[in-house]
Image (cartoon, rainbow, N blue to C red; front, side):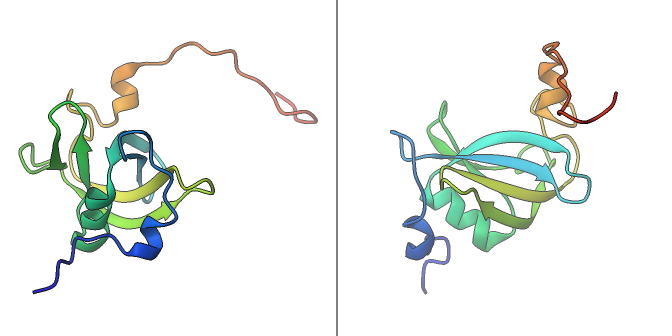
Length: 127
């Protein structure tokens, strides 16, 4: 039986991986545009994500693959995956079931909190 999780060589050739062989994966709710989390993928994790319909990451701390929701039940169902212009990040649009963050919040960015940046205004626009 063929390995369906192997990454297509034409896609692999377009990736610019970091020194650990990873690309950044930004995960976004497909219908609202809400950014849910960031994870890391190697070729195997990306191949699994593209072929299995669920998001798989490479855990840098545990040094193993993990599929979002296998233990928590908070699953991410793939709607689309796009490569950025530089090839060093992917945008994974999902249907998120439950919390995306391991802290139990909807997004990892809610859990981290606002940093209080000065809000800029584009030239020619009004407040």
